[in-house]
Length: 242
Ligand code: NDP
Image (cartoon, rainbow, N blue to C red):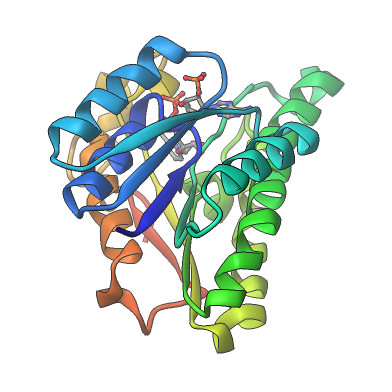
């Protein structure tokens, strides 16, 4: 059975990706930060999909926690390796730059960008040894276009897009693909404070997307069927930005 790790799998887009990968018969490692109850709901979905899963709690922005959690998992599962990594965990702390404090800048860069780095650096070693892997980075429309009030978040997501392209070139010969998904507005806890009625008028498809729609794309990129796609950023935004 192939194994996938989804960071931030307890809610929103991450939960939908865990469920999709379970339908595809992956054993799913569900990472979360604080919200164990929600992570358990994801695990229930995974089990109901006829596959198996487990929870793995760590803060993606804390390199020691990431290394310890993943090393322990590897020690408990010495004959296995994680073929698919979905770097999905993310936060936003919006403010216009003149009012943006250091914490809002540092926290967003740390969770989104450093989280991608710590987790990927650890797991890619075994992908290289085994000459197969899929890395899928959940970025954002903000990282492509930039959005006002999100200089921190746009910087983090834009940096992951550049890193996706660089890493794809580094590891292509080892049959590891590295791609990014850039969602527009998706209905999750992260966007619960936004005015959907007002924003949807800007979106050609006239609605927010669902986590399941993003998960379909992630499932394709995780599959063998996407074997000749690497270094790409694929938008899923209802036509908001093309
Ligand atoms: P949610 O706020 O619904 O969920 C965030 C998830 O990330 C939770 O599972 C949370 O865990 C986890 N998480 C947050 N911080 C950490 C951390 N330090 N370590 C580990 N896990 C962490 O977000 P979405 O589902 O909306 O977003 C998922 C991804 O998609 C993010 O990268 C986001 O930037 C991106 N995105 C979202 C868009 C949207 O419109 N929703 C648009 C574009 C991109 P816990 O439950 O434990 O807190």
